[in-house]
Image (tube, rainbow over all chains, first blue to last red; front, side, top):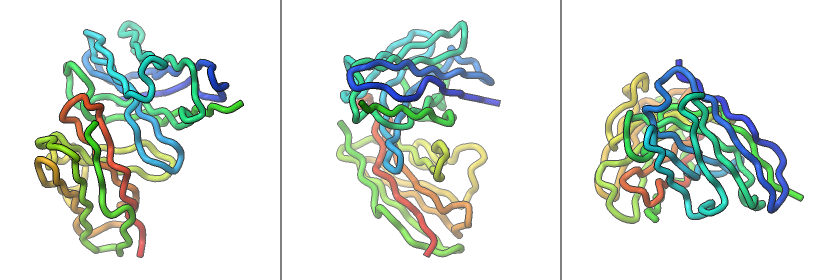
Length: 123
Length: 108
């Protein structure tokens, strides 16, 4: 059974940093691209960042480019999102999501999602 | 960026109704279009991909169609479990990947 478990959310200060983690199990982690998708409570979905499987190519939304860094540890089956220079508008639930298709060079669409971790940026 | 626009934003319907949600892309995404269902407090659930392919385990009352810039999600014989918010997502290219704003299907 595929499981994705996010952690690391909480309260961050404007200009501060947080690191999110997503522990994956139940599938061959290194074979799948992974993404972070966020959602302001009560609002829509916004793709934030993605990373390919073994090659590790990274992709970012313009809203986080230069501030957030996605990475993965294929030996530990963990996906990360390092969030620096946080802004109030980064407040959201952050989901990690697994790509549907194996061995793609970039993320595409998402068949499994974690339960989400809430990031609140406030002074 | 490719903008995805869904209509309507809210849809009121009764159990047994057939409902249709429309998603329009600001430029062609071929058939690289997915639909998700999200219930309150839960993560989204993939329903359909490549515009019309039903994800494993999804009931056959869900169907999708379209190509290019115009797509539809149809739910035939609406069930109580189907009252939720639905999102389209394009994955044609790294534009970046974008979602529609969502359509809430509520009980009439």
